[in-house]
Length: 156
Image 1 (cartoon, helix red, strand yellow):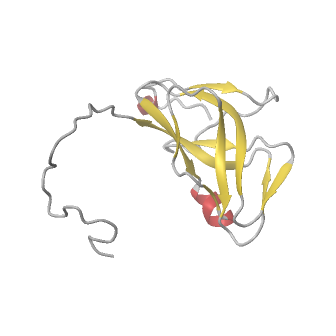
Image 2 (cartoon, helix red, strand yellow):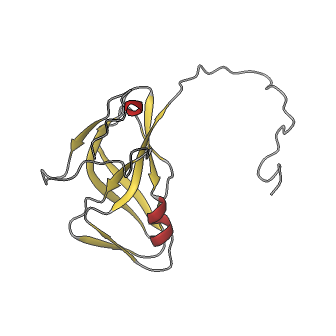
């Protein structure tokens, strides 16, 4: 699906095919307003992931994320719900200076082995603006009602 919606034309996202198949499909959005580009499994044939297993799965694509942005690799909700497959370092970050192949660090959190076939859409790539703040060391931080309360301090 060609993305021509005016709201999506502010930046350019360049993809480079790494897969040997010249017809390997470009990552695309599943619907007009989807925020992420579905990323396929560029495996040869099929692989099986045992419950609890972690694998690095290639996508067959490299991307040039524009400066001032990052690529976030996130699970696809249907894949996570139906198969128990998710991205273990959610969200995985693709920095704007990285030019290698996008690979998916997947984990099978389900109770059954899961088969992954070539072309399965396993994750999604969302492009997000990144702020680059100036860092300042201070003696104290502004007070808040929460203060230093950590995990669970604001209720269950």
